[in-house]
Every structure is written in C-alpha cells, then in structure tokens.
Amino acid sequence: MELFNRVKELRARYNMTQTDLAKAIGVSRQTISLIERGDYAPSVVLALKMAEVFHEPVEAIFSLKKDSGKERTT
Amino acid sequence: MKKRTFLSLIAGSVSGFILAFTALYARDLSAGILIEQYFFLFPYDWLYLLIGMAVLIGIILSRSFLTQAKRDLERSGEIPEFLEKLTGKALISASLSSCGATIWLIIALAQLFTFDEPFFWLLVNVTLSLFMLLLSQWLLRQCINLFNLVYPERKFQFDMSSQEYFEKLDEAEKYIAYHSAFQAFKSMDMMLLLSLGILVVYAIFVQFALFPMLLLSALWILQKGIYFRETMKFYRAE
Image (tube, rainbow over all chains, first blue to last red; front, side):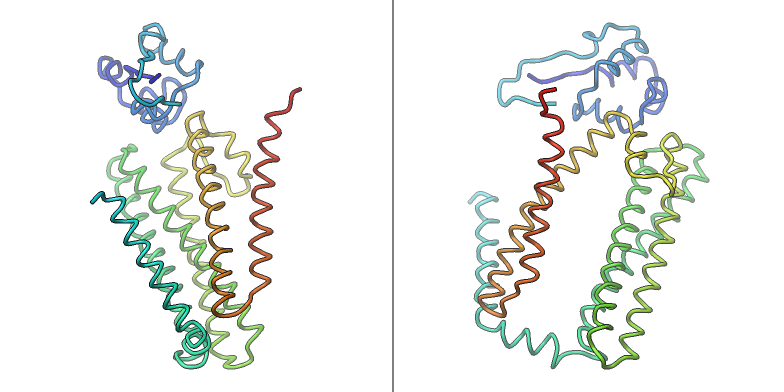
C-alpha cells in the first residue's frame, strides 16, 4: 500500500508557501517538503493539524492506494 | 551489456590489478616510497601535503558558501530553499575540514613523539595542523551561527548536548536523523569488515599488523553491541 497526499494541491489552493504551512502546524519547512514528496508519512497528530489548517477531513488529504508492485513502508 | 554488469566488471578488474600490484611490489613500496626514498623535508610529508590540501579545499569551500549565504540572507531578508542548501553545504565542508585537520594533528603528534629527526620540520607540521584545526573550528562556529539565523526555531547552542538538540527536532527531522544513523551504521559495519580484510591482505604481502586488527575488531564488536543494546531497550516485554 502506498500513501498518497494532496498537501501540495491544498497548499496551492490556500495560496500558502511550504514555510507558511510549516509555521501553521509548528514544524520545519523540510518536513512539509518530505511529506509532499511522499518520503515521510506524518504522524496522526500532524495529519490532524493539517486537516485543521485546510478545513478538510484527514482522509481527504491522505489516502492509501493499492500498489501493483512492491510495497512501500513509509 | 547492463550498466551494473559493466561496473562490476570494471570494479573486479581494478581490484584484481590492485591485488596483483600489491603482491608484486608491496614490500618494496612500503619500505621505499613511504619512508626511505621519496620525501621532501621529512618522512611522510607527501601524506601531510595531501591531507593539508584536502583540509584547505574544505575551508575555502566552506568560507565561500558561508559568504554567499550571508550575502543572500542580507539581500533577501527571508529564508529561501537555496539558502538552506548553502548553509548545509557550508556546515558539511567545515565539519569535514575540521575532521581532516584533527586527523592531521593526531598523526603529526604521533610522528613528533616517535621520530627524532628532523625535529624542526616535525614541529612545523604539528603547528600547521593545529593552526588549520583552529581555523576550521572557527569556521564551523561561523557556520553554526548562520545555521541559527536560518533555523531560529531550533537554535544550536554550544553548551547544549546532542540529546537536547535532538529533542528540539520535529518528527520528520528525527526520522531523517534515525534513517541517516542507520545508514551510517550499515556502512560502517561493512567498512570495518572490509578494513579487516584489507589488513589480512596487508599481512600476507607486507607485514602482520596485530594491533590495527584488534582495534578494528574491538570497534566492530562495540558498534554491534551498542546497536543491539539500543534495540533491546525497545523490545522489552514490560
């Protein structure tokens, strides 16, 4: 299973930079960059904070997609 | 031919050449080139020249990244992504040159205490390495000051322990630290075993060196021991 996210899309919709979003949820810009690239799966706490910023449920931002090939761990 | 196969063939050829070359000439080279024949002012001076050049390149690179980053910071007033990259590069260069200068000083001191002649040049070598170490440390401090400007939310203080600093990182940064540390552990595990293998080849063709072998073995066991101790902490039932 692979974790997909709409963080970049939602950030663009709200006209926010990575730094703006990072400040809003209390993390570094690199963390936002890692999440957007799919290199890091955020904790539930962070996902909930993002959901609050974007006024969307967590599952509308993050979703699991079945991977046809190898399984992804993050 | 696949790229990987081609690279493996090249690696195999180079390894074979080095092994054959070592087998044929190692005894002569070790005694000749390193000590007796080829040095300018004092034994091993070419080695210090190489280390010194590497340290100097690191210092110059770090200084240039630092100057560029400071100029960009004053100009833009905010922290764009490239400034973070410049800060990272400056820190890495300064850290590596500091490591190089420390190694230089340690070897130079060991040689000063072992060799009697030429005392003047050996002392010059130690002084030079000490100067480079101080210079790289000063540069490292400058880089950390810049780092604190770029990342004010996780300022690094010089009296702070690495554990205290680690606690300041957010979850993804901690993940990066764990991931990097694990990769470093895996690489070191392989490198230590490989180094022991190289010492076996050295023993066959040049000279049996028990102390370096024991030292590397102890480091290998120690590293594994620390890793297992830390993992066991998390696997306790209660």
